Image (cartoon, rainbow, N blue to C red; front, side):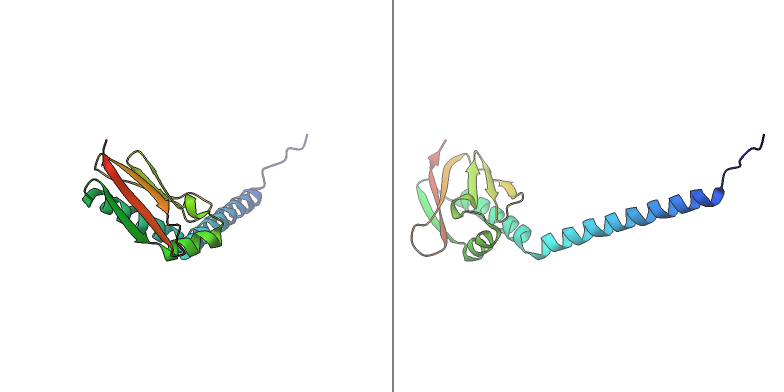
Length: 134
């Protein structure tokens, strides 16, 4: 009986194909990440969440603040996010969402009852109310 020997050149071909596929996959993920960073949504989400947390931490009870969020409103509208869904407070965690994917969460330290809602005037502001301590 004739015995077939393994063709070693075939294994090299498979290894090269796998290497190329993995490189293409890595580059696609990298390009997707850079595109998402380039839209500015991630940077603005982080910035607004941290600024709102600092405002809440430094505020006294029974305080009302207006935060100009024109850039956030424009970007959220472009990405299909409703104005009332841009900023949410759940417990001591602020969530800012400017795109339909994800959002950025940041917590504040004060144990206060804080509410947040968009301004009804044509200005693109968010109202942050500190009602008192919990």
